[in-house]
Image (tube, rainbow, N blue to C red; front, side, top):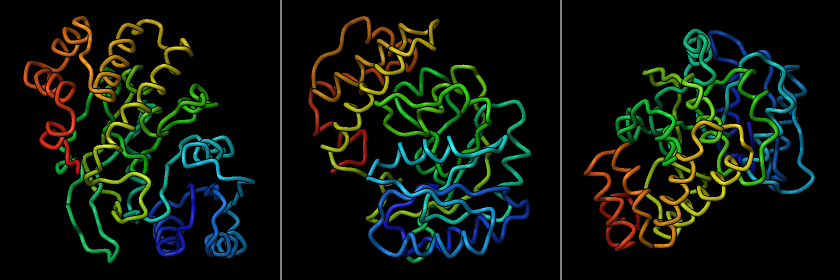
Length: 293
């Protein structure tokens, strides 16, 4: 778990992990990113009362990706689940994900969206976002794996750690490698209440057009880092095409014809037309294809 100024919902999340699970966790590694509210005091109370809880305090604000990376590096289990500071785990979550992962490197599940008052907004995040179990190439374009629904194996962490500097979000980065090895699975059950509120780093609902452009700019940086690492040797052309895809949307420019052909081959005519229109007309078309303001 990574925390930052999470006082409001933190106890509810911690209790759903430490108290109510039908299969208890062996440890809970929490990295706090220089909170200025009562988050650290709450974490200290829990660590004093439960030997499974280990709290690490950043000496400066490193951000969510680095904080999760530190938590992964300090974990010891064969299987690792990821938690936000403001969600609620269903009581069968740990058991069902442990039972489901099998030989996969990563498994993720469905979630329901709740608001700040715990009222249900959407009963299925997967259906709301029209998410499907995708292949490696799809993860180069976008991400369907939500970090708070994930479990991964120690084998995957040993392969991806430490992170390069340009990782945009830990969940997509892990999913890219798991899908590359064709060892990514999906559990079609709602196992998490995924909270949506103004304090989310990333959430389930619409974003501004500027944030959308920043998203694609960061995707370019992340994919270039993966390319430079050289671990995905047999699919480097896909990485190059995906970089051009994100670059063309981020800066509203026309992609290469080779990238268009690659995109059409993988995603079909309808999505290719949408891709061209987004690159050519920017915000006006993005409002149609995305929930942007």
